[in-house]
Image (cartoon, rainbow, N blue to C red):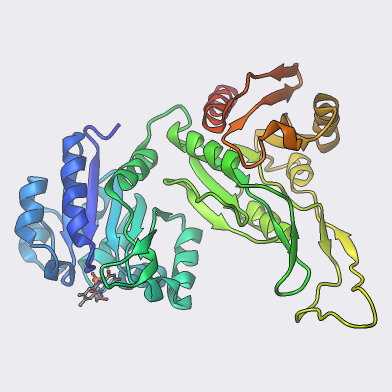
Amino acid sequence: MLAGRHILLIVGGGIAAFKSLDLLRRLRDQGAHVTPVLTKAGAEFVTPLSLSALAGSKVYQDLFDLTDEAEMGHIELSRAADLVVVAPATADLVAKMAGGLANDLASTLLLATDKRVLIVPAMNVRMWNHPATQRNLATLNGDGVLVTGPDEGVMACGEFGPGRMAEVPQIIAAIGAALSDGPLKGKHILVTSGPTHEPIDPVRYIANRSSGAQGTAIARALAGLGAEVTFITGPADVPPPDGVHVVHVQTAADMLAAVQAAKPAAAAVFAAAVADWRVANAGQSKIKKTATGLPHLEFAENTDILATVSQMGAGRPALVVGFAAETDDVIAHATAKRLRKGCDWIVANDVSPATGIMGGSENAVTLITDQGAESWPRMTKDAVAAQLAQRIAQAIT
Ligand SMILES: Cc1cc2nc3c(=O)[nH]c(=O)nc-3n(C[C@H](O)[C@H](O)[C@H](O)COP(=O)(O)O)c2cc1C
C-alpha cells in the first residue's frame, strides 16, 4: 500500500524524535519515498545526517534557504507529497498549526499544504492535558487533521499518563489508512459509535451500555477501503481507530450537532447507542441526599439522529445505515424500525445478556434492507465490520 507513495515527514523537537528514525526506516522498507523536514528544536534530538542517510534524500530545515528555494520552493515541497506526517508533533507545532502560524519551515509547509496531514503527538502528560493543547487539538480535529496516539504509559520524563508517542507499527497503520487506494477512496463516510452520557448533575449521568467496539471496527474497515471517515464517538471503552477524523462528544445533542457539522457524506453508519432520553431538570450542581425524599427527575426525549438524517431530504447521504440492538423479536423489531426511521439498512443484533455480544468480541447480525432480512453467521466484530464495509462499498460506488 505504501510502495511508491511520497511522504513529507516533519520531525519536531521532542524526546520521541528518535522513534522517527525507525519510522522512516520502516516506511522506506515498504517502498515509500520520504522527504524529511527537521525543525530547529528537532535537530537537538536527531541529526540531519541520520535522517538524510535513512531517507536517502535531502533534509529540509530552513525556510530562508536560497538553495532549497531554487531547487524546490517551500510551496512545492508542501504539495509534492501524498501525505504530510508530523512525528513527533510537539505541543508547539500543534499550537502553531491550530493558530495558523507560519514562522518557520515546518509550520509554513503545514499551512501551505493541500494534502492530508497526520500528526503523531508526543509530549509530557501535563502538556498534553493542558487546556490549551486540548483546545488546539479540537481545532485541528475540526480542520480535518488526522491524529494517531498518544499512548498512555511511563514517559521519558518519568511521569505516567497519556503523551507518549504512538509506536511505529501504529503510525504505519495510520499512514496506510490515510493513503489507502481502496474502492471508497474519495468518499466521506460518517460513523457514530459508543454511548452518549446524559447528565443528571455534574457528576452523575444516564447512559446505554456500549463499548464502542463494533462502531470502531466499522470505522477502521471503511478507512481501510479508502474512505475519509468522520468518527463521532461518545465516551466509549475502546480507543478510536487510527487514520480517521475523530470527534468526541458526550450527549445525544452533541452527537447530533457533530453529525450535522460533518455533512455532506456519501454514507452514514449510526452504530452509537444514543440515549433516547435526557434529564430535562439536570442539576447545575451536585444533587444532595436530603431527608425530604428522593430527587424527581424529569425526562425529555432526545432528537432521533437516525430518523433526522434519514428523512432530511436535500443533503441526505445516499446510504443511511442504522443499528438495532434488541433483546427479543429482533428481526420483527428491526424491520419495523427501518420503515419507521426511513433509513436504508438496519444492522440488527440480539444483545440479551446470554449472547455475550454486549462488550464481547463477537457479533451475530442480521442485515435488513428493502430486499429482506439476511442473517450473517456469528463472527468477530472485525469480520462483521469488514463484511459491512464491503457491502457499503458495493452500494455507493
Ligand atoms: C529535553 C527536552 C525534551 C522535550 N520534549 C518535548 C516533547 O516530548 N514534546 C514537546 O511537545 N516538547 C518537548 N520539548 C519542548 C520543545 O523542544 C520546544 O517546545 C520546542 O520549541 C519545539 O519546537 P518545534 O515544535 O519547532 O519542534 C522538549 C524540550 C527539551 C529541552
